[in-house]
Image (cartoon, rainbow, N blue to C red; front, top):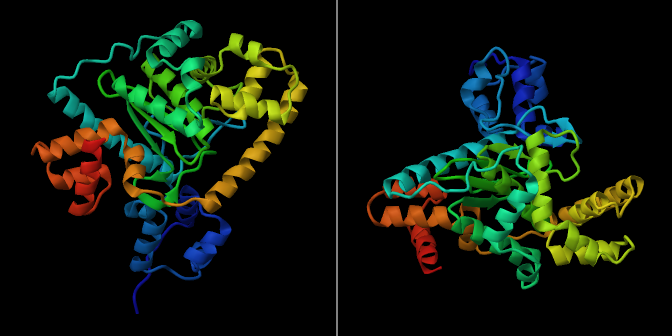
Amino acid sequence: MTAGVDIAPELFFWAVERAGWSEEEIEERAPYFYEWVEQETKPTFNQIQKFAAATYTPLGSLFLSEPPKESLPLPDMRTMGNKKVPRPSANLLDTIYICQNRQGWYKDYAVDAGFPELSFVGTARLSTRPEKIVRQIREILDFDMQARSAYVTWSEAFRALVRKIEDLGVLVMVSGIVGSNTSRSLDPEEFRGFAIADPIAPLIFVNGADTKSAQIFTLIHELAHIWLGHSAVSDASITADTSTDEELWCNRVAAEVLVPMDTLKQEFKGIVSEEEQDRLAKKFKVSTLVVLKRLYDADLLSWEHFQERYANEMERLQAFMEEKRNKSSGGNYYYTQRGRLGERFSSAVVQSARSGYLPYRDAYELLGIKRYSTFENFANMIEGS
């Protein structure tokens, strides 16, 4: 008979909480879980290996006397209902680690290639008036009302913004999953994005599981962090009023870049209705939640009316997101992967591998690709785009 191993009960709870498992998932994926917790039976080493793999937990951590204190490797500026989020999930942690690895490789590549430092990184301070940075970002991105009127959908506007920001020298990665693992979905309620500030290789990650309109706000919010020269994990909550000064500053920059107050006052037709919310959101290419907050900021909506409208809109958007998740399809793998990795990063890896600068096995790992044929198809698409 195979001997069981001793695992502290709290380690089991820590692992499933970290993985975000529900009670139903525990019952389905670890049927002996509560027997182990109550120490009625001991798991075998093989069972612990499988449990660790299923919960994306480092195997050695399960043999500790108590759960390790895991902190985010980037400054945590998230709020949840204006409360500090207590513990990062395995999905969030692994996503940051993956992006840090990519950013580190790209920085070495950029230094070797003689790329200059980016002039705008770290030029802002929290004491800088947001309006000054708003003018700089608007000018450099060329995303005024006339320019964005050319984009029919939020997706078109978002792709255009990503291209413009990558042209500045910033890596932009957008994904709703961890790496290339389609079974590990990211949760927009845990985080909406993060920024890794660096004078040569800054990186912005946007949670692709969020709505496209919300992604646009997150993208500019994280760009504001880069302007400050600060790394951060954000939930980019437009309504948070107890966030750090930096989050509030970045929110003000993003809001004014996307929904200029003077233009909003000119455009507003005087009555806040669902139709008017949708019209303004489409015009400015933002979410209806951002529209409502800007109407409140402009004193065009009372606090009570804002709260009521915001709650109703949150309910409507959550229903939309649930429907979207149920109907989502994989799409074209290569185009999807390019979005997850970003054009700038993908091009650098492909070019380095084909020139002999980077071993192919390292290129596969950086790109989340397993086979040569897949790499070739992806590389041909990148080089032809």
